[in-house]
Length: 251
Image 1 (tube, rainbow, N blue to C red):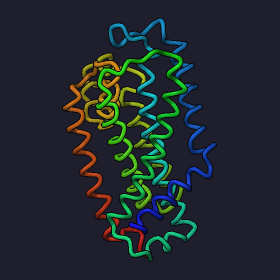
Image 2: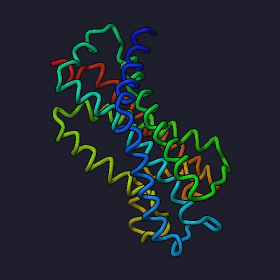
Image 3: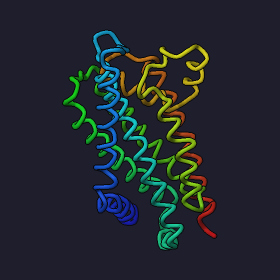
Image 4: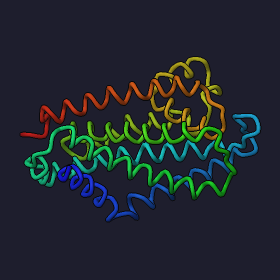
């Protein structure tokens, strides 16, 4: 376990050394979203009975921050290691592909959850929240961070330069996150776009996470959890196979 622990520690230390950029900046961004959208729409939108729009917005912003920062950690680490040429020192170690996968993804989860906790404590003061089902909150937070950490790993393996990784993030991760119901309920959409939203796995992560606070959701939490769990298993299988084969890593 020494090799796994060392790589995990190295990945955590990598983002912790620049905490202003990796932790504080996304927390401030989420707070700005809350101030702007909450101020503009507070008096005009009520998604769930007895829940203000600002309160509705807080869990979505927390989960969005968790997802985006978990992705950023693994993807940026791999692409930087590729470009600077120090990835070879990781590949030379006697670490199995499972150890590599676990260390990178767990470190991404630490960063994503750390940002999420920070966003929660900053935004919590703007709207009172209840904790109807805390177990669902934890399950979706951990599983969502693991999924995006895995997606970041796949993106970092696939990309060979920064603009390819930026395209992966800007054309896939960011739209999927924003269109997953962070700022609205999918029931407010026309039937066609409701159907499209249900094809987005990010929607189930955010919807299930929000259920833990209010006891209301667009989809039953058990269905959301099942879909998210299967999605993670598929992505984890792909990522481990890529690491095992050395795709775009060992050349």
